[in-house]
Each structure stands twice: as C-alpha cells, then as structure tokens.
Length: 192
Ligand SMILES: Cc1cn([C@H]2C[C@H](O)[C@@H](COP(=O)(O)OP(=O)(O)OP(=O)(O)O)O2)c(=O)[nH]c1=O
Picture 1 (cartoon, rainbow, N blue to C red):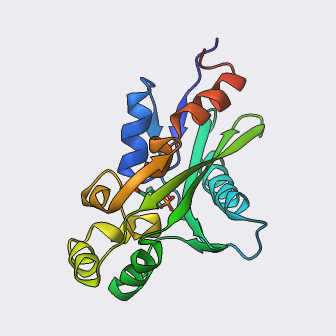
Picture 2: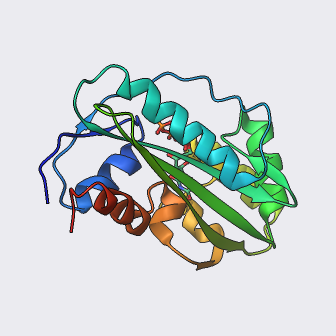
C-alpha cells in the first residue's frame, strides 16, 4: 500500500461524511462544472460523465493527488431526475416517484492527478416509495429538504418517511457508495 494525498472534488456534505466514515484522511476541493449532459446512453453513463468532469476539473488544479468525483441521479421510466429547479419541479418529481420503484445511480471517478490514470464505477440501488398524497408531498417540499437532492428527496432526512424500502447500497442513495469507492481506491493501491 502507498500513501497518497486524497482530494474529494465535492461540495456535498453527505459525501464528506461518508468518506470520513471510511477512516480516510482527505481534503475537499470543489469544482464548478457545467452539469448539463448532451448525450448519454443511460443513467450510469450520465452520472459517470459528470463524476469524471468533476474529478478532472479538480485534478487540473491540485498537483499530486488522487481526486474523487461523484454524481448521483434518479431514474424512472427512462427519465433522469437531477436536483429540482424549484418547488413545483420538486412536487412533480416526488409525485412521479410515489408508489413506484426508481433507481438511484451514483457515478464515481477517481483520477490520478499526477499521471492522468483514471478508474470509474457506477452503483445502482432500487428505492421504493410508498403511495403519497398531494398534501404530504407539498408539506415535504415546504421543509426545504428536496432542493439540493437528486430526485427531490433525502432518504437520510425527513424523506426517509416517504420510502418503503431500499434494495442495494444505502450509502449510494445518499451520494457515495463506499464499497465501490473502496474497490476503486484499492486498484490505485492506497487502501487494502
Ligand atoms: C436520492 C438522494 C440524493 N441525495 C443527494 C446526494 C447528492 O449530494 C445530491 C445529488 O447532487 P450531485 O450533483 O450528485 O452532488 P452535489 O451537487 O450535492 O455535490 P458535488 O457536485 O459538489 O459533488 O443528492 C441525498 O442526499 N439523499 C438522497 O436520498
């Protein structure tokens, strides 16, 4: 195993907490990349393109480090749900998710800023929401919690009450699939 500087290319407090929970020492350097994706093969490709973009943008600025970028999206019926643009958008997203099972996909990219070597992986979890009433949805959106979350909910917060079950990695839904990240970092020899 070697010791490398680890940089998390993310402004997400959830990603920070999850990475800290892995017991790693790391720094945070945020990027301000354009999050529009013109063409994509599916939600995995969508999330990976953005994860790569975030990691590469930061890798260009940090010198010698392994840079981790991530992006989380929700997919239902072939549609990608990112963060809601406003309250109406949040109400619409949650209304569509209610009573159904959707996929949450997080793309992770690890870039070696010194060599340009790059590894990536997408992780998918299936989340089922219970049927939801309109008043309940509006009340949840009024809490403000949906606005910086893909699919307009936070399973780790009040949004947990909307969820009937999760099939797969819960960390992945919150934005950082730790098992996948371990595997990617192990390939760079920095973690057992
Ligand atoms: C579905 C779901 C998403 N989310 C969050 C994870 C991500 O932070 C966010 C999706 O936005 P992202 O664009 O993936 O990430 P971000 O803008 O928060 O941070 P950065 O780009 O700087 O890395 O939604 C939850 O916290 N809980 C959930 O249940």
